[in-house]
Image (cartoon, rainbow, N blue to C red; front, side, top):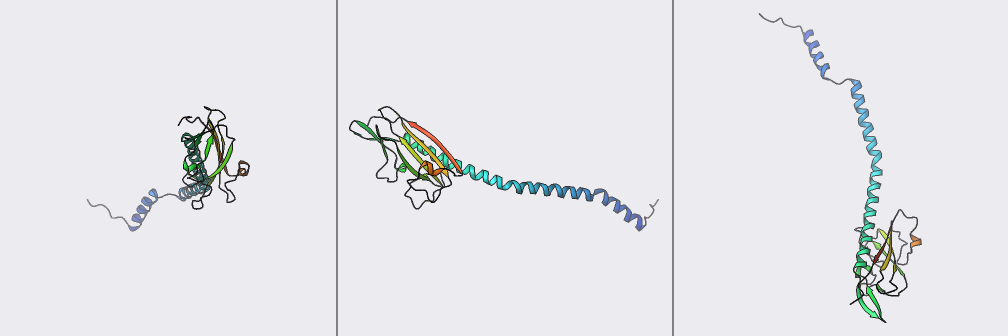
Length: 194
């Protein structure tokens, strides 16, 4: 037995029913576009906040690296002379504006200050370095031991961003009102013997 032939009208209606059963309605499409639009708007809105957070994180990491170098410099104090019975220690070359004449600390010496800068990589750079671009300013106040066996204490503060007006004589009071500030106190008792 042969199946009856369907008229063109029946075929058109059957294909239309099949296509509408698998398609999205206009409401579903509008809802999906609205959700995608809202999500994109939220992402674009949060992007500046994420970038600022990442920049601040980089600045803090750079400052922490410089403060770690200060602690390392204190641990690297080496005995140079014993003038008048007072022991003198020299800081590493990177901790001085003149590598041939390192900063020294001796028993009984008065407290003194110095200012350095911090590079992009978090390294301490000399205040007289005109080649490396400074990113942060590092202020140091060194408190020498007053008796043999006492620790050398170093107060170190890093601020950012670096201002073009910062020089080797920039003090702690000049570093207020900056975007960021990180400080520490390092105490280290160097070996008193040669």
